[in-house]
Image (cartoon, rainbow, N blue to C red; front, side):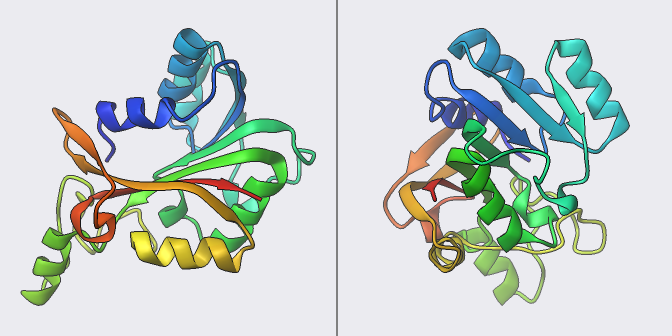
Length: 197
């Protein structure tokens, strides 16, 4: 679960006037914010019927599509920014989606819960899967099909031939959050990367 302040911090990474593709856009809140406050245009991709309806009610262009099918409907360099907030941990085709992100966008912004955050490590040491604000589900009812860490993602980006132009963590909850640039793998509950192909 991502706080509003985290969403704002990620929105600030998107250049003014960008053409944006938002993968797993949910109800379109971030795209609506980018349109309203940063003069952006673009599309969201979402599978859930109710969330697609929310997008349409917000005036956000949305394509109803399963991300497991890839991004073949878009040409190379169709977007200035391709954004994935809390999406990768729900996909089976993570490597394919990262390569597709680099193919269709000039820049990618990826954020996901950092499983290596110290409270998660402590929970595992106690023999339990962590349940936190960033990972709010029990092991048996989570929508996440995998967990990853800040350090793991850096390795995966290199393996996919992507250049990391910025990487930092975010620590916080719905009321307050801050960027973490010192030991983000240990000290941040959310990992944020900007990528170029």
